[in-house]
Image (cartoon, rainbow, N blue to C red; front, side):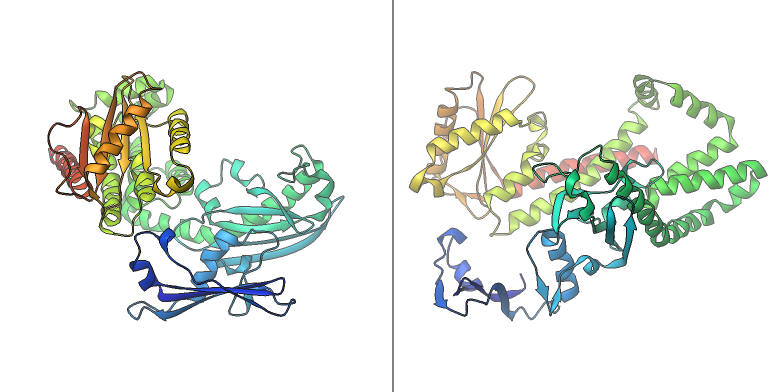
Length: 479
């Protein structure tokens, strides 16, 4: 994406190994597995070690790579690895490379000894991929990153936790770690001492960085509702102010369009008894009663329509992403498999009830493991096996967007069905998906319940259905 040539050089145990990868070489093969790599090995100083990756012939239409952004990306993927160091521009990758505020503190704790806490709070709009605080004992990471009880606090916005990245060193816990070194002993008193030290520091740092943002969000909302607040009695006004702060805390990071209706209903309940009585009834009702209220709001249901419009909007984003993948000739079957396996609605309403499960995935793995071994392993297809509520099975074979579906693909697909039918009692529908059809793809005398779909047609049809839903939602709201 950034350059046309990449060279890799690694040194270890007195040998230097290197190779060069060119974008042009990739364009001349169908798959990276077929690429011939010229691997060079030569002796070097035994004391030298480490790996260097060099990008040259940078694409001129792109902004020059940012070392700061590179650090942040690599830190999330490799920053928690033991015995592994990455250096960028002579600076070792570390916790303080996260863009945002950095905190470092150290203290002697009773019975535990010296504890060192280092963490950063990201100022990015999206959360980190592996948020949390890693516990390190004697230089080794213990278990998965955690939040030292902060995630169990009801008054703390859970979305903020995704901004946290750091580590705490507590060598005094070495006798309170499980044998597999995968977690601290759960009922350890020393761990509770460390937790009581870490948690308030985290809360204070979050409060300093994000309280101002929450206050600004409240100020923006107050501009719209200031007149209504002024009309409330004094005791209700202060209550409304506290309630709005709680809403903003709970829904931190959500768009204002989602928060404003909640605040609006809150104020209506304070001003009007009919709103208050309705909310009291909903609060006391069972889930089934609340569903009944929603069903009776309108003939079609305003709540249902709002949900459908929200769902349709989200699905538009998925279709945009699928379309980008389908247009990219480098997209593999595995990528499209992953994108479509949980979004079978893209193929049409009749496929919405089909879903995969662990048993079916294992069945496919066993089948492919037996059939595609040795030299045939490179030709292993990408298959999805799903089942609907009626017990009917659906077998999907994905091909690359640039692949033309041909006669051999058809024969292979029905042979998969014949083999799987030996273990499955119900009927199996077959669906072949590719970029286009070749001239020799059969159009007559084909087996029943075998379909072919092209990515562009599938996405276009799904988009039309979503646009219809959004149009209906708009008409319902206008009405």
